[in-house]
Length: 413
Image 1 (cartoon, one colour):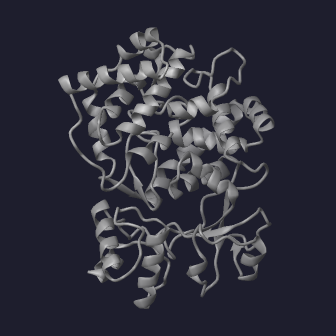
Image 2 (cartoon, helix red, strand yellow):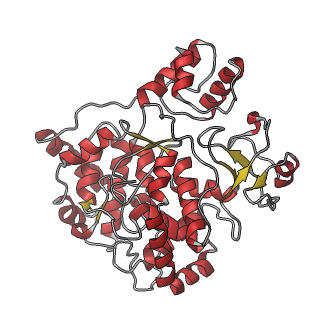
Image 3 (cartoon, one colour):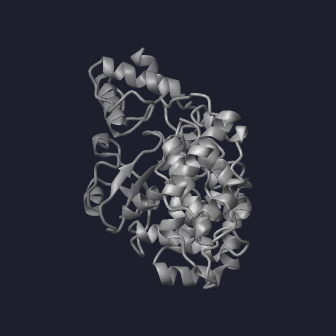
């Protein structure tokens, strides 16, 4: 899972990758510093396929299954082109949310909620997962089943498995796809999805299918591809349940923080009880004290000038589906809107430009040169890089929110 053409979007935090894949796969196919050796087209692909067939037989895949499935294993140059573009385009979180939680998407979600009321109710009862969250994942991943991708999964995975960029990961996914075929769940010709192998209503990667897909309609198949979304939506709920969903608790709440808030207390690495945050004067956007829903953190996904959220354990469960903050906030906020909630109250700093991948690498390199620990110079703005930015901002007399901006890079230069 991890995705996004017209319907699907995935997102590394703050700077969101705008690709055409799926949520689960996105974590596997993006990243600075990856090798970009040409993929083995033509005779090179045929030789790779021969070697893979031998490995698949050794892994226990039936010869008849290989004969049926690998006839679809053709090299798709457009898949390689899309993979190579993944780190090249970025979206700010506000641009991402404009699409993920558009008025049209909200209206579609509310209509889907009414249309599938009985199904959603049964899923909530069976799995203990908020039905609006399941609907929101469905909406963000496939625009409520209207765009699930039309690329043959075997061909896509074989193309990516033969490519040195993420070969090991995708070969494992290809083996998982063959096990799905081997078990009689679907004919390989009908196994379709995104360009990077995410499938069906929940956009599961094959390994996620094997671990979490369920036969909710009782027909003997775990059919996440069909017109009936029952198995697909129930499988998404099973995925969340299996990753620790806490029934009856929210993912997060938009908050207002007081003047003088200590940004050293922000971020997912700092968790406190709701009472701690209440004592600091943090309230929801209606001015109310927020109830205790377990360990909570304060998140500023676009720095001190943007919206802030108090996030709870279910935030991190959604992260298991896609680790990007923007994705989790998109799913959570869309679920809130489907349930009748309004738009976010606070504005975003839309005048800011997000850093390019090359600029993020440069920012880290310059911070390291000043003696800061960024956890690597790889273009990924993780907790250590955020802490390094905060330390630099303090030294510059700036608000230490840890947000990577062109101004910070200019000051480092």
